[in-house]
Image (tube, rainbow, N blue to C red; front, side, top):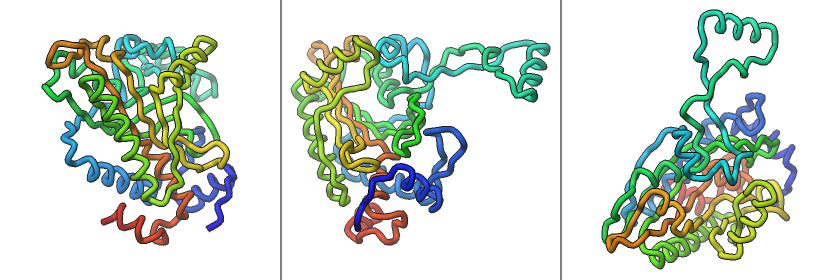
Length: 303
């Protein structure tokens, strides 16, 4: 199959096949039944591959305390991506004013007050404060599936403001954590290439903000703290990151008092598969109807 990389045509085809459901806001479209079937199948495949790893599964809501976002340093590094939850706390008169503004087509958001909550900017963030203290002898492994919000409105179907990440978080001795990160990078490549995707890995950096961010990004790349697996979805020259593999060293463990069994400061790492991006990569590679996909791919996703 000849693959072309036209963002507009790809988006329109996704809509025409009912795979995505536009709602008028960039990067916030709905997912159709077939899209969800693919995403669930891939998540289940990840679970089967990792079933013997002994990960403890936890679940968190798509919001987290504002104080935690501040403690993480997110607003220092990524203020451009953050999403805050605001609510109405006024009286009857203020409620009538909001209603009048809405019906008059006027802006009304300034009448809302910030709450103690923010939208989750990274699926692993809620994990660390809940596992402070001494780790078991071999460390700890957590898995989570969560919605993530990042304010990056775009016409690209792969760049969503609200999306899901299946993540694994490893805590333990530095050498163990780094070896785990690197081993999962290999496993992730094998997994995605085994699904017929032209996946490749490379060192990467987070989208740090501003001039200081350029220095942080360069340091991150120099220390090889972050790798991504990329697949051409909307561009052959600039492939899309569908999975990331991050070594935090002792950043989060120092913040939350996470220690190894010998009382040394633990290191942490996480890996995450973007369910929407992997789904879109599979659609781009194999077509809009999963029933026509190669049997070796279908056999892995729907055994």
